[in-house]
Image 1 (spheres, protein in one colour):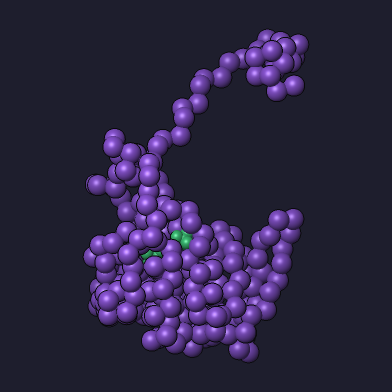
Image 2 (image 1 turned 90 degrees about the vertical axis):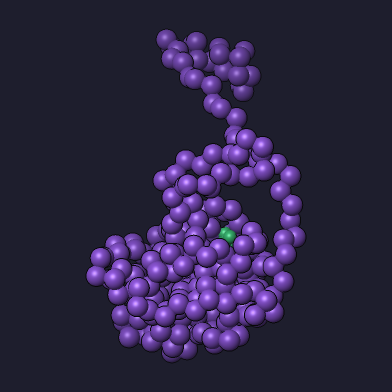
Length: 249
Ligand code: AMP
């Protein structure tokens, strides 16, 4: 059984992003890029299913610029058997990525696609849901537990006020939440091994997908700076300030 894991190259979560001075976007020149953390969790889960003997092949897929090959190599160092890059310089929106992944799913015929619940750069939280709709497959988003057996996947998901358990008939889409697992560290021998694994490069045109953006970013601005706080000597002063200055009571 084959599992597809889409992995996105994003600004590393430790980087403090800066808005470009002309307000057209975020400056990513000379900034450390990494695999989207939720996608590391997705890959870890696929590897655990493979190690448990329930999955035979794990394929990592990335859509974007040439440098996404580095993200795929990291994916293969984590354990993916091979990688596919859908190469394009176009700034991809979730619908375009979902269409590319649908075309790849038609070709590769995986039984399970595990995505991150969201990419930490655009925070869209849309691609998995759109992909499920395009494929007509069942979906379970925000998974905190995944059990695969007998042609179905049982997913525990975190919802407001508790946990929900869904049973999906394969093929299916799962998106990962933070508490699903703790991804393994990539070791040097595995980085070396990953260099020899197959990495195919294809283009959106080869898959018959138009990735032209449909959205236009009007302006990107930094959030307003928070003003410094101060200490109040007693409760009476606090209440007075809340009433007269903050006007919240
Ligand atoms: P988003 O809907 O943009 O928040 O992304 C949700 C998930 O879709 C990510 O965690 C990835 O698994 C996948 N994804 C989004 N964009 C890409 C991309 N360019 N390449 C590969 N996977 C992606």
